[in-house]
Structure formats: C-alpha cells, structure tokens
Length: 142
Image 1 (cartoon, helix red, strand yellow):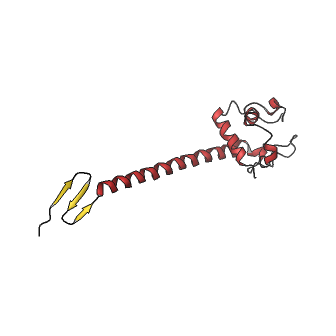
Image 2 (spheres, helix red, strand yellow; image 1 turned 30 degrees about the horizontal axis):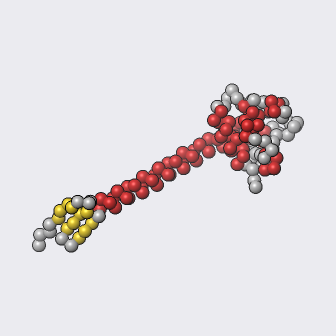
C-alpha cells in the first residue's frame, strides 16, 4: 500500500486519512517558548539588578544602618543622632524620595540631618541612588 502525502495551502499537512496542523502548532509552540524565555530573562535580569543594589546597600549603608536597615549597624553605637531605622514605615513616610536623594547624594546636614552621614554623590550615579531609595523603601515593614 502506497501512501501519498502532499502539502496543502493553509499550512495543513494531509496524508490519506491523517491531517496534521504541524506548522501552526509549531509556530504557536515557538511563540510560547519565546515569550516564556523572554519573561524569564527579564525577571532574571531584574533579580540581578536587585541583587546588585542589595550588595551595594550592604557594602555602603549597613555599616551604620545595619543589614536589615534597623539603624543597628556595627558603627551605629556612639553616633548622635542615631542612624535612621528604615523599617519604621510612619517615620520613613515623612521623607519624600527627593529628600532621601539629597541625604544620600549630599550630606545629611543638607536637609538638617546627621552631620556624620557621608556624601555618596561622588561615588554613586543618580540611578544607583534612586535604586537604593527603592531598596530602602522596601525595608519598611507594613
């Protein structure tokens, strides 16, 4: 018995009693794979960016503010005023992102805060400072 197969229009493969819509399924599968792969890449790159900011916070800020942002870092003892506790939402809500930006970029005293807060404007880009602010805001426990 000889089977005849032919390619038909519309992307349908036909054989004697068999009809396969391989191209449409293949295209749909590839599209789904591409979407899932791109979504995973975006989330992994987002995760990597968040990780970088967390490391930056740990390296620069945690010395005074503590790893958890509670103002209990190893250098916090003896500082007056005490380093800010980023986990207290009602206190953090009082300061706008622009005030936090000025504190981090300039010096705490530029907005009538601590004179011992170092200025990070020469070491960090504006984007890094804004990402740090997002990170700090995320430490607030509601």
